[in-house]
Image (cartoon, rainbow, N blue to C red; front, side, top):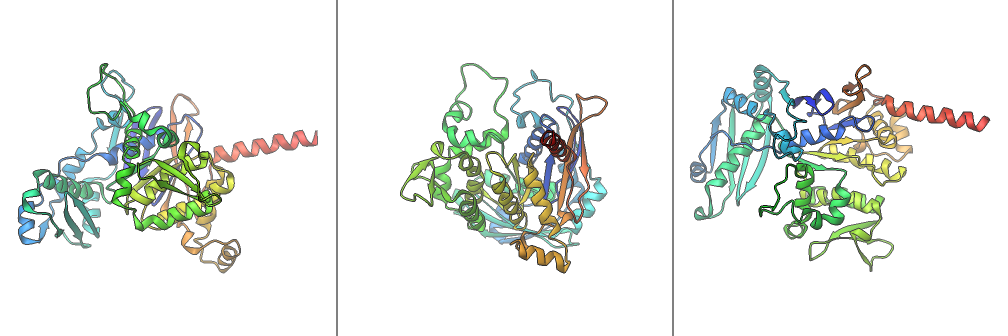
Length: 435
């Protein structure tokens, strides 16, 4: 899936390819990396009224249906997702009082011919469950039909019109957005969210009207995260997500050396392997626990195959050795069906990702070194699965930001701004030492 943003804050234009398994945003502070993350999250968060591909009553009776796809109608529905209005909700802007996003544009980089050719070639199968009605959607390559199968259903008198509306919206969104159906974002505010979530959500998630109308609200990534924080007990009651539990356990064992748990009252707590008899509330735990709690809760309870996980500055509060371990976790994430977008300033994470890209080589010497350094072959990253972007202030007009796609090959990719900062620091250190 390819998108293009124009006039996003200081960013004049950015072309993105979200079909990559791993996307990396790099660049100096204040160049709009978080803005781009918010814009992507907001776009993928949209759920519009779907095309009436089938009648739920008919599916309940027949159990399975085969539907001829109208590609032109789907492309027309796809264009509805490219409205610029969603951006204000993504950034928590309530009205036109804030004109910062009035010139924002979201462009579709696929022509109708490219979209139809891509969808016709596509092969997929996924299940969705809503209101107790579970439906599997399947399409074969070069097939112009969608195969819909009812897996389970509740009693007819409990099925509402909303059930049909939601299922039609989901399958239409999938066909329109081409593979990416969901996004989950861990913003930099995640530490505060998991420490003071209930307090921060007190009036922002309240459905009652406020005494004073606000022109601005929390951006949707923050508001959605707070919503999940105040529902931790419900997440625990529904049970853990076994598909990604092993990755969560690996983080707890190798990085935290302890476990993040949800108490029976829905509070987050940490249990160290060194003192298992003591359960610390998260606000009394180390910063590394606060930072990684969001990722752990995501893996245990929310992760879905083939959705986009966005993490803004994953290195917050992590010692370099743990940043390196986290990069290896990222490789396992993308090799287990989750797409990942990170915005980072960490040279350690970037260098380790480059090491994992070099692991993709089939050369015997590389395999020998990988074994020597303790790398597993399932940690390797194919360079074709990586998209790297550098955000920089324009050389002529420094109030604008240029975003350029960095070349990624078998040796990884280079981030000039980080390399230059490290080189300059090393030069000064050597000059001072020899002085």
